Picture 1 (spheres, rainbow, N blue to C red):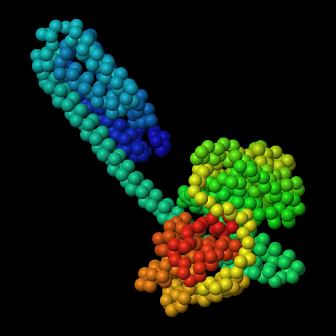
Picture 2 (tube, rainbow, N blue to C red):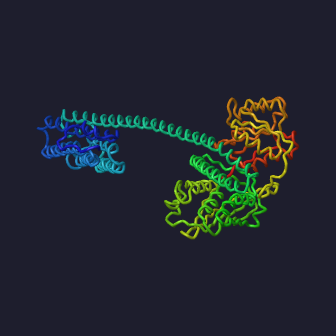
Picture 3 (cartoon, rainbow, N blue to C red):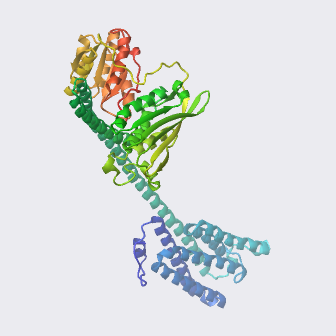
Length: 609
């Protein structure tokens, strides 16, 4: 109830106005109607049969009359006690049945049967079903007990068996039927209103869910767009920095290292936010690719050694000897991201000592391999009361951690979510001031096919002279970066500023591959690829097309594949990744490679977040 009701209230409407629930309003109406009709029965009955009533019947009627008047007033004053009032009414009915059969009338007549039905109906409509079963059973037991105790010829339901004279008997029978009809009508009306109310609420809920989904989708679109807009200039900053470092003086190299570190830090920040958004919306799916874990770990640690060296300590990689020859089926991008985040955190929060990355086989079978990864450091450590909280998004070990060390607090949250995709969890052992050890175990399926050894640090010394590459890129800075980068490898290039120009230049020239940006004016990369794949010249139609994109949409891989592209690189990309993809063209006899000569490969994507 919304508020208190004055003691002298006699308005049912005021009571109903303060009750928001339709079923409770219906119960109040049923109780009030039942009490009102019971009182009305007594008022009508007493004048009709007053001279024929026995004293004990009159006293019983007067007692019931006063009780019902009191219950009615109590209902209008304390509707919150509805259940108690309902119990009183039903219990009175049960006692009435028993007293009629065994004390006063000692006859089973129509009125008694009607009271049994009303006890059953009202009990189930107004109170808990457990009590309703008890009261109904008590009423039915009274009737059955009466039948057992009496001969069958001594009971019947005709007029002659009634204890009340006419027309009182007929009036009570009629009003009892009216009571049953009204109770059913009120409850059905309330039930209908409740269903309509729930349907209206369901429609509101559906609208809210649709709006929420639309907001979530718009947020994803916004983040994807922002990612593209941020990663595109970062591609130029990081790429140009690497190009300039080749010819820079020692003093300039120091400045360029700072510039590169800042750009990579910004890229890591962007990737953390975007990856957390994707994991939050369950849009990350693991790929299954043959991977050499030893080579993958070398690659990750090689990228982090510089950061450790700048702080004056070493990054130690320890790999189980048995693991070096094993190839497994897993998602190298996500596994790299997990180790990169954990090892990167260890370096960030360590000032002296060392950081160790260890991989050891814990179990091996004919088709499965279990590996435990452990990243330990001698850094600041984590207090015991914060060791669970640090895996929550935007949470770090202490309030001044962000101020001293930077970061978003998303790295460990992303690790936790990604490990969930591998059906495992991260374990933490740490002591404040003495360092930390993060460990996790992953079960890998062993790769049974032929695998070529992968060098930990691929060389970039082989010339790609003779390759003809068409660059489709609308951003002039990124186009210039690609031209300069490819010219280092003696690759001939031509640049198209949009998809339509790329189609026209390709149709009129001879190219061994196309580096295709996805978002361009007039015709985007998807449309341009589809047009090229429809060329009647099958050799031209099968040209290898490598997508270049700053987008991190969760379905980008599928969209690229559906459009007919062979491979892709995410901006900002590492020059080694692009070199490896183009080297495939160079070794496959320039000018004769078809689309089957290059396979989709995501293992050499951009730097992990």
